[in-house]
Length: 129
Image 1: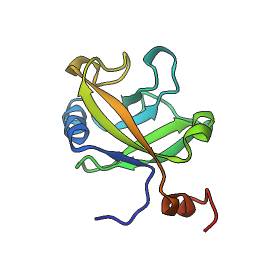
Image 2: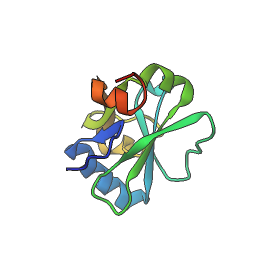
Image 3: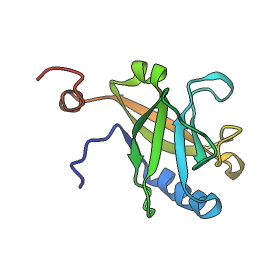
């Protein structure tokens, strides 16, 4: 078990879908949508199809059993609201976001969140010991 602290994780079912999608589309990345057309779905794109910039925060990377971990981003403004949470990317039956690569599969990615533990919050510098 890794002792590396992360703000993001992936379920086994989501990791399996990510391996299938990577075989079809090449390396992938996530951007946690802030709302609008696709709600607050984690949007999955081939690397290079969605350009991140200085207004985005790299939350971490998830290990889906691939050669490279899959990076997960969120807008800095949205991160201000979510900075005390740990996010887990999961997958359920349904139609994915219109631009997300899982859309045609009959599955959709979703975020499950929980508050950071006190230890995690301290390690992320969000609270004093």
